[in-house]
Length: 317
Image 1 (cartoon, rainbow, N blue to C red):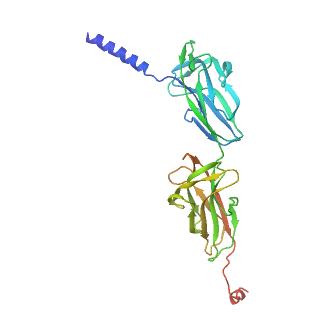
Image 2 (cartoon, rainbow, N blue to C red; image 1 turned 90 degrees about the vertical axis):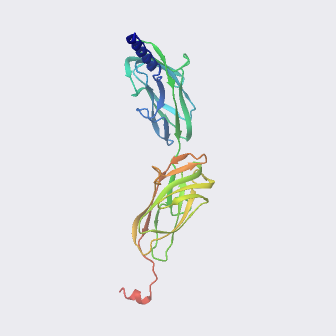
Image 3 (tube, rainbow, N blue to C red; image 1 turned 60 degrees about the vertical axis):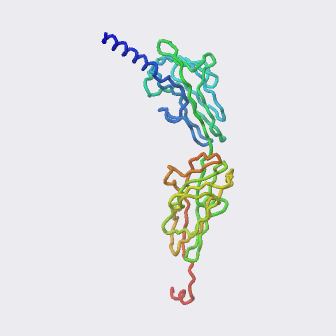
């Protein structure tokens, strides 16, 4: 009797394990491993997307589904796995594979490869895999043509310019290269600005790396909550949002610097990542942090401009 009870318990446990198996998923990803469901890029470039099937534990013979899109971009190519395809990704497609494809465990397969493009900015356009119009849910078929429901996943596409943070030698945020006179009495003015952001800026995080021959005399930030310092890493939360659109830059710091009597050629002033982040960051007015490009600026000091007496001048000859 104990043996029969143990067998029955074993069968029940197997049944529970089977019922607890994850449902197959179909989703749009931007890598073939299924790790990247959010595309963040720039307008004007073509990006690859892959409709991946995962967790099916099937020898897949076909599929039926549709991608519901919030749009804002074009699909410039749509390439399906080798099979007979009816419909399109955006209208609803059914595919019968010529040769079944094994998909087991967490090792996804691509059923459709697309390329997306937009010449203009789009933010957080959602793409969701839903049912083909002929079915109630996204469907998979095994090699014996038995149908299985699948879960459709949601991904997002954001194409926007990458903000830039840099040290500029003019208040218009254009000049990153400057040649100036040196000497103890010379003060070099510069401005740390954000440009190319196309957003209302609410904050930023970055660090300034200076050539050791350059010393900051004063660094005046715009109104905001400041954590840290420029040369160790600063985080700024602005009290008032900063509009950075088109060619108009947004000011973060006003700098005054000296190079003493050092001479230099293309001494670097680099904007790099704050130690707490993997890249310079710009936050929008919804506190969403966007990766920014840190620029490198250059300063050349070819001569000193110290005052000299006529006797000192004559002594040079």
